[in-house]
Image (cartoon, rainbow, N blue to C red; front, side, top):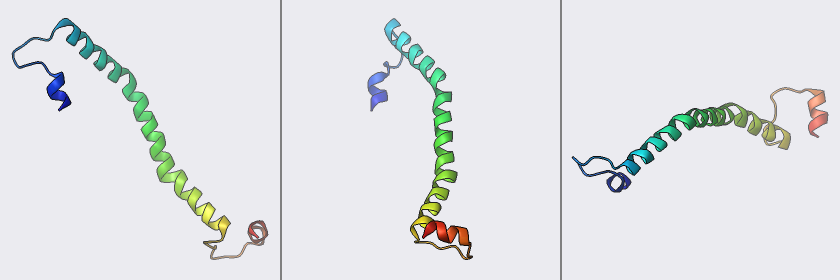
Length: 79
């Protein structure tokens, strides 16, 4: 729907302000797209690697999950 309102009618040239706004928008996308992808990469790393390890460690520390082996140091640390 937004494309309908933002587009010029077929066969009609862009006015100078419309052209300038389009060029500025394209420039902003070109300048900021790489930074957005970097943030997405960081979020994916946290979601896929850090968060599962953190959840496992919280479950171990709370006693919900126990290790299948005995380590005296960890037993003293957790109790």
